[in-house]
Length: 287
Image (tube, rainbow, N blue to C red; front, side, top):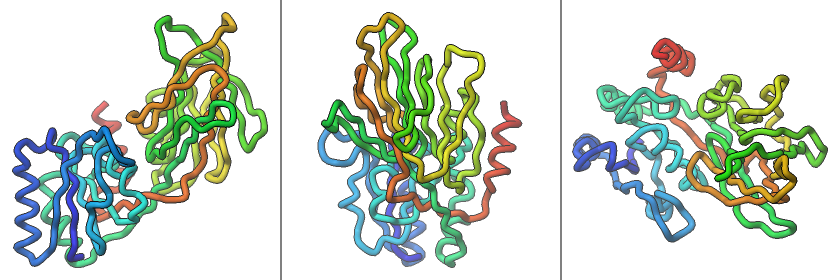
């Protein structure tokens, strides 16, 4: 690899000192590199990173920050189909598995083309109000449909798979997660852990008001529709569809979100630094 692009989180790298060190190391080894700071945008089709600024021919995107920074970057630049390597500037993550002390050894492996590329599926969600689209985005981790308040009260969610009625939940919300997102919010709500390179989706209710509700796993090509139903008092309720805990689309009773596998996938560089099992073991031993 000779052409790199860095997406960096200034909040995690004060004064961009570590970013500048990596740029210096790359240039000392005859590599090309440009830098873009990830920051919330109020205009444009992207959220944090402008994909149009990434030069043609870029072979690797280094994302400096943590899992959150990598999630943000992935959603913005996935259509460029450039492999990404996450560098953790905080605690150990599931996505950004390279830490600061190991970055130079990791770069040396990239220079020598000693790596593998792991494909991670994404989800696309389209929010409908009648026959009108009111919101749409993609997610690498999960799409969460939840109620909003006040007042805080249980809401009904009607669920369909491939246009066939599945069930209804009275709950605080529903999580539709990818294998990558199975170790996030879904896990904290009792969902299963799924190997990140698998291809499937998992539906996990949030605080369901029933004793026999479990997570459900579906094949990757199934289309899941979640309709925001009425509350117990049969009045209009308000909710949100959230993409990777970031972009939010307001919903109300009768609105529905159609969720399916995205046509694009995120390419994550694997350097055999830590396997998923090793990261999982460390995470579990620290809790």
